[in-house]
Image 1 (tube, rainbow, N blue to C red):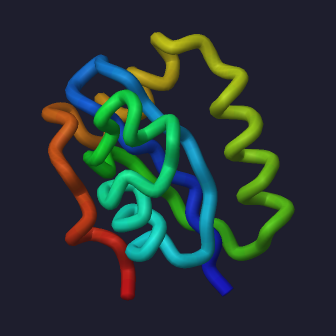
Image 2: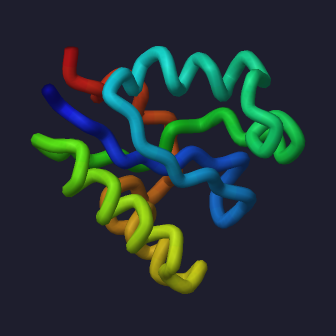
Length: 94
């Protein structure tokens, strides 16, 4: 089963949230509905980056690694894949 590591943002270079899930569509909706304290507090509602992994352990290691990165590296990761920080929910594989 596919596992996703993802980043959501409030605005370009604004507050971000890094997470991992097996159901990215429902997890994004969860954030948008305000059911996550951090994302609700900082108005983080835009999916700006994600990648897929084939197994739990790989996705967990990747999520933890990205969370330890400097903020500039995280911004660059997003900017490289999504220069305008637009919502990419429509690109989530079914």
